[in-house]
Image 1 (cartoon, rainbow, N blue to C red):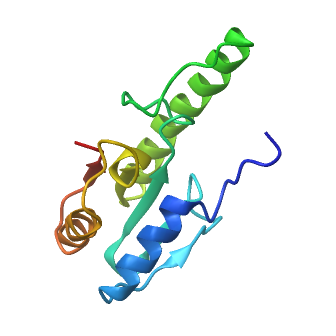
Image 2 (cartoon, rainbow, N blue to C red):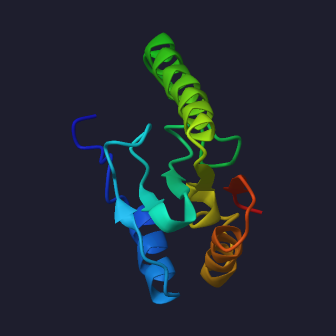
Amino acid sequence: MAGIRAVNTSPERVLRHGLHALGFRFRLHRRDIPGVPDLVFPSRRAVLFAHGCFWHQHTCHLFKWPNTRDQFWRDKIQRNVNRDQIVSEQLAKLEWRVGVVWECALKGRTRRELDEVLNECADWLNSDRNWLEISGR
């Protein structure tokens, strides 16, 4: 697991590049914000997380329980899910808007067109909605 990246993942880099090209400016991995969001839009009071479907137990074709060390993986992934919920609640209390883009929206057989994902993110950033979640089809 030491080789698993926590930052600068492929889905995160795709979002960064696309949103920057659309004119959005952001900060990366601000440690002073709960959950250390992947993208932080301070002027819009919004954060975006690029969640990996396996690590955050998304109900899609990219998530599959490993065949070995069953209890270890169930405990680990459940801790991640619990932490995601707590972080979302903390951010809401601090009046941050929270967006999650799931890995399956950007890759795999259920992926969406990149422009569609980026436009949905842009629409949300320009709105006053508190929550955004984008997953595959």
